[in-house]
Amino acid sequence: MSKLTVVVDNTVGMSRLAGEHGLSLWLEHAGVRVLYDTGAGVALMPNLERLGLDPAALDAVVLSHGHYDHTGGLAALLAARGGVTDLWCHPDVFAGHLHDQGDGSAYDIGPPLGRQEAYEKLGARFNFIRENTSPWPGITLLAAIARTTDFEGPAPGLVVRGPRGLVPDPFHDDLALLVAGDSGPVVLTGCAHAGVINVLRAAEELSDEPIAALVGGTHLGPAPPAQQARALEELAARPALHLVSGHCTGPAMNAILARVLGERFLPLAAGMSLEL
Image (cartoon, rainbow, N blue to C red; front, side):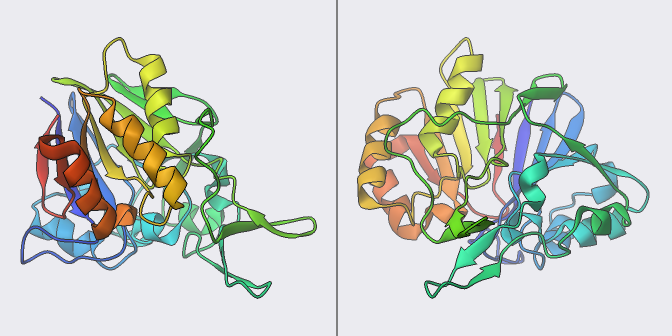
């Protein structure tokens, strides 16, 4: 049996847990324990302790992309574990992710320690991937997710520096997980910056049966209205799909998703435990 525990999210489902703008999911599958993202840095370690999850038991950490709210707890986790920790991610995690302030300037929203070497000094051993990879049985890392939809584009305000100034962040590092759950394939997303429907399509290409669930952030909250509408149509058109969304989805969009998907929707919250 596969089990997923929500360690960090914007909202909490247990009063003794800390909430923050971030995401971290603890996955147990076929004897392997993987932490997907590490939150923004404040909630991870106390929530792990309160949930009875031992960082020393982890086999690896996977980073969905290089934003602070997904990498912020990494330094503390590495320090607590000591020794070597395997990390799986796309090399563009360190590509210089920025937030445009609208006046020609931008501020850094990447990993708090900034450079790969800083994390290696704490014991990180990076396994960089640029294509779909299956490090463990029943778990596939979806990398280089193809942009096949005509309605999912760059996220407003998220940029990198190009040769002639700020340009939309392409998020080549966006990485999702495909897990062979007992009830069908399950997709885990950090923010789905590649587009939540693009992520679903990438998973569907590898699956022999419909995707049973998508769990994590969808980034539909800040998406343009036209993109929201088309994504809602696509999600509703997959009758086997259950959605458990939070973080960058936002409470307003979660309310819409609940109305559109009905019993196929659950809001994400720290402390939640799901059998996959």
